[in-house]
Image 1 (cartoon, one colour):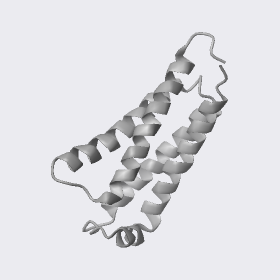
Image 2 (cartoon, one colour; image 1 turned 180 degrees about the vertical axis):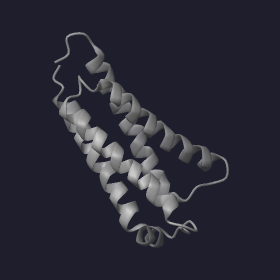
Image 3 (cartoon, one colour; image 1 turned 120 degrees about the horizontal axis):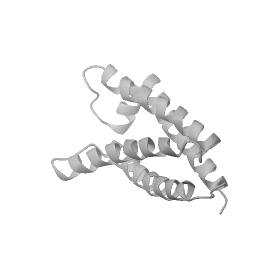
Image 4 (cartoon, helix red, strand yellow; image 1 turned 60 degrees about the horizontal axis):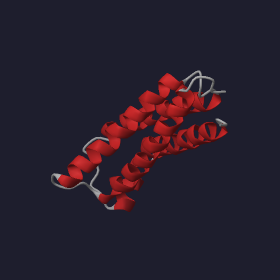
Length: 128
């Protein structure tokens, strides 16, 4: 089976996480205002995770360039996705979370499932 879909998947995820990172890095106040969410007392709490999203976006681009050689990095991407949606859904069940965060959590569930499929495919012997 071709790995072209895996390259496209990780390129899309790089764009997705990179753009989210840039939005939260450069215009977090506008995003919070549009969503009707009270911002934190300091935007550094938002901008640091935004920078991490940009770093992960770069990693996803590297994976897209050569998924077979960089399959071990897929595990870190899966950990990122589980970390995010795990926290969002935990807080949704145990006291609430602003609706701003829910769609991205569901997107990360989908990305995780696709990453798992990709990782399994590139981990098979003879994958090219």
